[in-house]
Image (cartoon, rainbow, N blue to C red):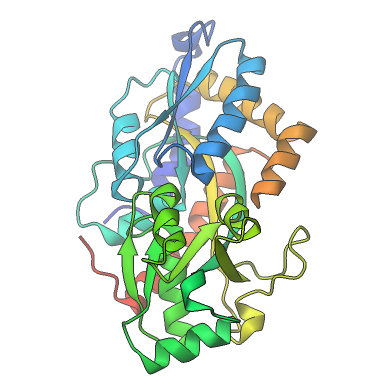
Length: 322
């Protein structure tokens, strides 16, 4: 089992000790931003929004590369094996840095070894339901699920992702049994719920709500502690009869272990500039993502805070460790 963020915290200290001259003149060529989800999804949209603005600050192109699958393991493993020079970085999620350590007996990367760049933001999900089911509320979902244990299907971004954890936590609090169907990302799951092949799906606001607005799926609740200002009429799962429910997805930037501090500093400055831009912030808010301050310290705090919470949830939900 991996440590609980100690090495991750040490990366800040060790990075400062690596010769700044190693990244002198950084960057002098294009940077690759790897996102561990398919093109077209919420994480991809966020990556492209940040890449566009960060490129202006850095004076070099930031190219988004999608490496989806295995609960972000494929993208994370690629980045951790990349040269530690700041030219290949990862848009990591809570799955990458927290959840996966409790789901997989062996990971192709150490989640605590990455060099932290900065925290991007946090966002809730919405519970989508298929039109064919004609659910009127979350209470309807629970009633049918109790009457037909294991009959209703629920999609996720992949095993161990925030979408999967939301499904498991919901089942625990509602005392119901659903059939989990993992996909590689939202873009693969959405067609299935639109076609009626899947009943339920906790999706990000940015990808789920356009389908609701197009009348292709229904929405029953949001996973945040409080209602979103942009969706004031949508109740939370907690206020819909399941007190205490709150599951969010969060997003960060990290670099391969051993990346020089001068490189991560330059990347952090570009990230902070993007997050301070009104147009970027507004776009993120429309996506349902609350922008962070961009600091590596905020990222480290989030990891340390969430490790015991997720470890307990994974154990209680009896999610099979692979």
